[in-house]
Length: 376
Image (spheres, rainbow, N blue to C red):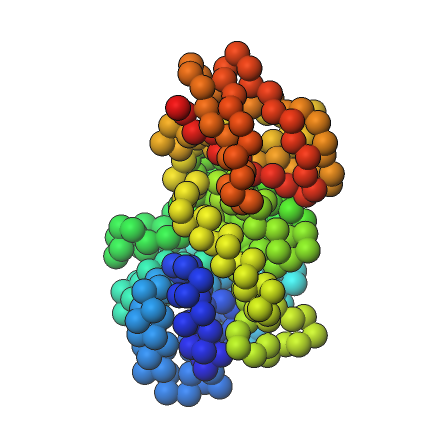
């Protein structure tokens, strides 16, 4: 808890707006009680932490992995009836999480989970949830006789209803709650889209994945859908804010400060990193491109070179170009009548004028170049 509180002044200073309490706050997966080692005074310690977060003009969000119960949890001891069982009566294992599936079609599972969400959002007063786990994309048929399913496949069909029950419980308490689904590095299930209002890049292993997932999700969910680039530390070089800001995604970072509790995998905000973080977050806050319209129809990222993305907002067009190295002409598509003044807003340079009839510019860059076309 002290490590989080010590970081908050820097979080506020950089211009970030949310603080997410991630995996590790809980006693175990399933019971979702506060860890005694991290919150020895229980709710009193948590409320102190939330007060510290809000005092820095930040909103608190809580990590949560529903539909799973770890061996040794009170939930499994007291409510084995919630388990999703196979045709041989065995519990279904959730890989990597060392947990067992609960059945989403069993009413007691739904009731228990909604009660947890009401505690998080109502009693604890979190402003949002980060809901995690690859197991939320699909479940196996359930043969648990206690559930009296008409067919084993009911569990598969009712998963989306279970997830939507979480969304409804959160937004009934706070209509402006952020409900983020992260399927843990896997692809998204289309059927879950109605149960979230923010989609992260979900543990990307490269900047290409950040951009590719952003284009794909905005195509599926809508050109103004809220997409987060996930922690910038997961991008190329661990610092590629350009791949998030340029495509109109929400910025995110998991830096540590003023000390690094895990020096082996250091995310310490060094003075050099801080200068870059500060610059990009300021550019993000000035433009807030996630509130714009992603113009995914203008460029094909498989064939057009360099890779190009466009966001339209308040009459301006924001172009983001990506390549290991590029030197040559580019065409600014999507321009309408009249002339535009073009700026490189990262380097604060004027690049000239274009129009619908004359849309070409000559660019030379490494990694990225982000431009804004301002109508005259």
